[in-house]
Length: 175
Image 1 (spheres, rainbow, N blue to C red):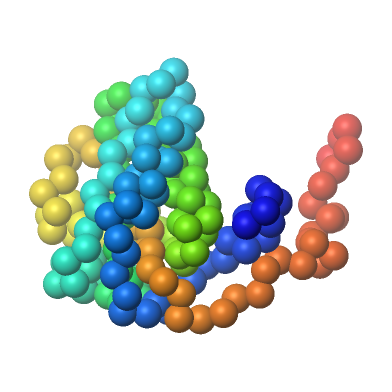
Image 2 (cartoon, rainbow, N blue to C red):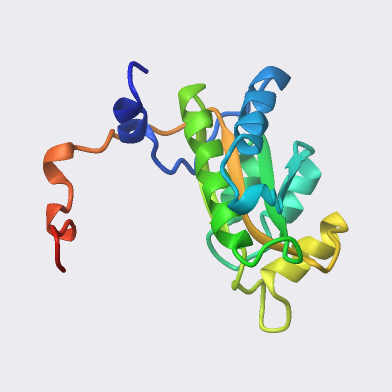
């Protein structure tokens, strides 16, 4: 990648992965990127659980009825949590850390996809968040925002075409 603009164009949601493992140096670069992400008043309410065991990834992939099954085939899942007692804007801080990890993964030649957990259901009786909290022994004062699936892409996604961006969403001075 030559520039940040090129990185943004190439970062696409990847849901199909090869079986290739990710070396520890790349995982460390991704998690270090998260630790460098901005946080309100440096509260650093976010915390991350790196999951590589295929059995646990399979169980995590069942956190929602739809939209999470591909996690079972990823090399890594990063569960993004936040201590809700440290900051009232934990969601924003954890979201920023998540996208920074996705951008770092893209720069390293990896694919990723955001799996929304917060405010989603596993089934009629269980939230996705409670299911994951119980599976990974996450304390109750921590919220689970999302899971990032990460792996070597086994699908090709075209970069964004700048000529097709929704320029009508940009306003000048007034809405």
